[in-house]
Image (cartoon, one colour):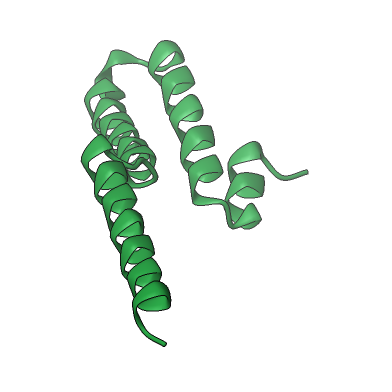
Length: 87
């Protein structure tokens, strides 16, 4: 039987694999000796950072949304002017 980390990695879903790894590292931080906490904490922080990057990459900022709306309005106005002004 394969572990959850192997299954998540084989799924091809990067976010899922990182979330499972995050959970595994958190569990290990709670259950292992203090001698390896620094190593685990460093890996844990790196995984959290990657997850945050994935999350922010999918978000559209308000500025982006407004710029897109303006561009659509302008394209619509140009299309209307062409349709009505040229015969």
